[in-house]
Each structure stands twice: as C-alpha cells, then as structure tokens.
Image (tube, rainbow, N blue to C red; front, side, top):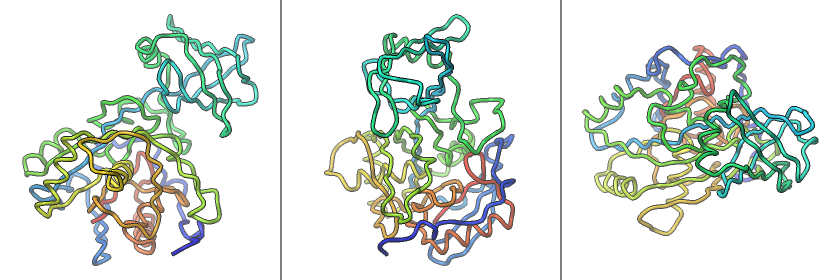
Length: 345
C-alpha cells in the first residue's frame, strides 16, 4: 500500500460524542473490544479489562506527567502573550509556541506572574516551524516550581469545558514531568484496578514518553506517507526491557497502554540491543507495518485523519478500525481524551 490517500482515514463523528468532561469513576468508561483475527466486536466496561489479560501478560504504562504548560503573560509593552511550553532543552531554555506569534521578536522579554510568583523569559531564536526558543531568568529547579504555580494545564482544542479537577487529566501513575498532553489511554485505570490485575499475575512495566503537541496535529498532506511526524522524547528502563524479554520467552502478550507506548516500544525494537534506551523518536507508524513487540493495545478513539488513527489502522487493519468506529458512533460511545477506550487484541 503506497501513496495512501489521507481521506481513507476519515469517518463521521457527531460533535456531541466528543467527551467534554471525564466520568466520575475512571474505570466505568465503556470498552470496545476489537478482535483482529475474528473481526468480532464486544461492548464491555473498562473494569472488565482483566477478563482479557492472563497471568504473565505484560501491561506497559507511560508514566509521563502533564505539566501546566500554558503560561499567560505580558510583554514589557503591556501586550498580552501566551506561551505553550513544548520541549525542555536544558539550561533554562524551552521550545515554545507563542500566541499571537507575530508580536514576539528575538530579544523581547515576557513576564508571567500570578499572586507573588513571577517568571521572566527572553526570546533567543525564531525557528523555521514558527516556534521560539526562549531562555528563562530563573534557575532550572526554581523554574519548575514556578511553572507548577503559575501555569495552566493545556487541554486539547476540542475540549471546551473547564475541568474542575486537573488531576483527572493525569493518570494515577503519572510521575515524570514533561508532557503537554496526557497519555489518555491510561486515564481509565484506578489504583484498585491495577492492584487487581497484579493479583491475577499480570506483570506491569513502565516507560516514559513525553507527549508533545504534535499528537493533535491532523494529517494535512493528501498522502498519508507525506505527513511530517512530530518527535517525542522517551526513556525505557532496564527493568522494562527485562520484563519484555521474559514475556516474549513465555509466549505471553505485551499490551501497550496507549499509542505513546506503542511508538516507544516499536522504536526500541528497531535499535541496537541495549540495557536501557532514551532519546527522541520520530517513528511514523502507517500500514503496512511490522509490529515487533506490541501484541495488543489499549487506546482511546482518535480524531479523523490523524496519525494516531493511521497507527491503529496499521495494527488492526483500516477496514476493521473504521467498522469499529462506525459501531461506536452508533452505540454512542464517548470520543477522544475524556472518552471511552478500545482494547485491540
């Protein structure tokens, strides 16, 4: 399949099915189980996920934590400026998205303040993709503390409702700060559900991939392969590598929780063998694709014509995915970040 048209990955979605708020209880989300071999679809609840996992299967979670990456400030002239922190580059420097972009030149300073907290950043370069590299005047440690106090959690553009509890946009196992969006497949897990799976003998491993803004970017090119995929930073510890090896040796399943985990695991599968891995991945998964580590995945419903919909189509086949999505629309599932989940076996 070469030169696939992007419109092949479009589907009809009524606006009212885009979930605006999280459910009261995370694990009460609905779960559409998609069987790749038989093409059977089953309607379940997320807390029933254990029915499909066996002893010694490995569940791989992304432990990234969303940072309050939206900063609202003013230029020294008084003009309002908004920053969206994208990537931490070390030494107080960040790559940021700026709104309104036209007003900020190299050398300009922006001040962010809230209560008694204050941050100051100077633009040091203007990148080709429209982003800016800025340098904060605070030391790294102080910078992180102030971002936590001054910043706002950036919600995806399709969520218009205000979120009462920002923790609901974090997984219960989030710990490594750095993402600008949540790895949403993990939002359905509660600590109790993870405990229950452990008691059943399911093994649990973690990776870190800091989700970037590119995850929301629709494919703008007419041809899928021509899309310019975004890069994201990842880390896979030795313990996780060992657990994957053991799982494969026992002929058990590696279940990726989210496309971020899929992307990370399939990236390291294409690298030289090491004890642990870290770096940037620009792996773009589209059909046909040979999955070397991932045997099953848990993931939410993705936007039409998005690289994530293309990724799940590479895993389960485009026709089956679109059939499943059509069924989900008919059954009034909730879509996107705060929506329901799928389990693809």
